[in-house]
Image (tube, chains in turn purple, yellow):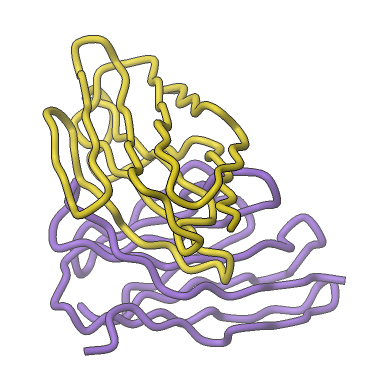
Length: 112
Length: 111
């Protein structure tokens, strides 16, 4: 039982490049989330998926897209990376909305 | 949107000491969670506590929803307690599942 897994762990991009961050959970959770964490700050919600087949914007969605591929997987895509997107990205899941959230190990992304 | 303030921002303790971390929030909430982020960056859920009191080993938490605050107690602190403690809330009037995080309390436990 791996919980929430994220790939890659580290990534360096040049401005304008695109990439997809992958997240998977094996806890049979319905809801999944993407957050970003910037130095000295708490986490901010980018997008979430309350259940399979639905996605919705969080606090800071600009510059990102998401796909809920199936119940297990929720990906985050940066179409044209910008230096302002340098951050640590966390994926999380919960059994239902408003339930306890469980986090993956994070992806550290640097955009040059 | 809802405001979440945590205090103190930084705390240094000697091993064995007790501490209280506070989380104030500006609106009524459905959901309040405490997390510990260890020095390697991993976020661990400590408590789901929209109201009342819960205990887990040396840690306990109390949320007084009517007065809009929550407290996290750490007793007999150990070096493994070091890291950042976050409070996160979901407002009652907002969209379900949208947690707003505070900026955290950074705890350092020394020998």
